[in-house]
Image (cartoon, rainbow, N blue to C red; front, side, top):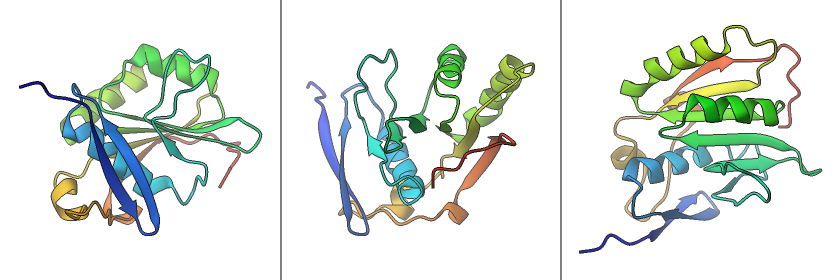
Length: 168
């Protein structure tokens, strides 16, 4: 039997978002995107999922632009290469980056970031979210309602610039 792309609807109080789950993506990938949206949609009012960026080599899982078109938020869930991260940091210096990792992958990812960027002069705001082990069962209803707050999640502030320009 072929595994086809599917659409899943999630609700965040009065906001409804449809996420695509590609055939090759895991449920972790789908629910991690819902987690990011739940945690950051109030901070970034223009937050959108799975938006195709024009003339961009890389595409975010979730992103937000300021009203003048500047990228202010970029989220990646699951695996992402450090080379890609480096290119994104250079291109979107003012963005807030969020990476969602399963607990078993967090230490290695942090180690890779530390090694690659130990001599960096300037880095953007970077958060690493530890994906809650029972998120899908405990925080998402059968109807797709998502209930979770930032206080309920481990968010590691990996880097915060001193001259951070806040967009929220």
